[in-house]
Length: 308
Image (cartoon, rainbow, N blue to C red; front, side, top):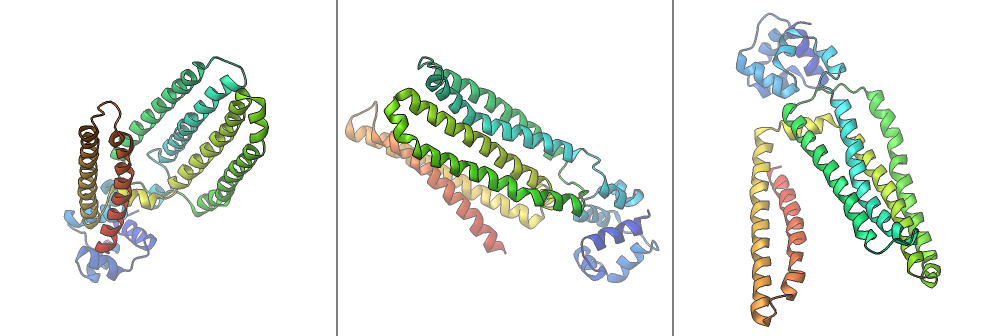
């Protein structure tokens, strides 16, 4: 395909008229019309703006077949996101599963009490390692590919969206059923003794681990189809980038203030009470951090609304 054909395809695909594209490029509608008919050619600055606007590369725009390029996953995005969703879901589920396994060793097998933290910490260590590797690979992938061509068809999206409600509803139902049986068998387990109680909680956590794993996996698989969101996050407009930077400064300031308050409360209560080993300020002062997190989210939302 020629440059003009590629440009017309991208413009039509974005739902833009020639006038709208001309306005974004600060040129006349006649210039866009001439480009699409291959009777003239834009300057390099405009070409780069077109690449950023339509999330494509210069070589494909000028000499390639954009339509064919959009249909194929040339960078392995789908394969990578499938790998990422599998391992992140496994890592998250393994953390809960580790707690269930630790309690189960004591409740079901009668292992000594030391086995509970040993099994728990071993499982958590493996889960954290998995999440670190997955996070580092994701960070590298997103830096190498700030923009992704939208190669998914409508049928592919619709097929997954048809399954998605079941992937959410079934784990939620499993959690509710598990909580119901935990309540119903709670008195019986208490009468049977500590091992029965631990075994019951371990069985409940097994259900939670499976349900959470499916929920995380389903959400990440749904997110991979939102390529437009990926492109906006990793290749934002100058206005969006300025908003992100402003929100980052505000959130950083909030967390610094939270840390200062925590230190003042902690050391202040130590000095006031004379209890240098275990003052209430250190035990309860951490509450400023979740409050700070909520304030950060609120500030980011207000900054976004203010700009709009």
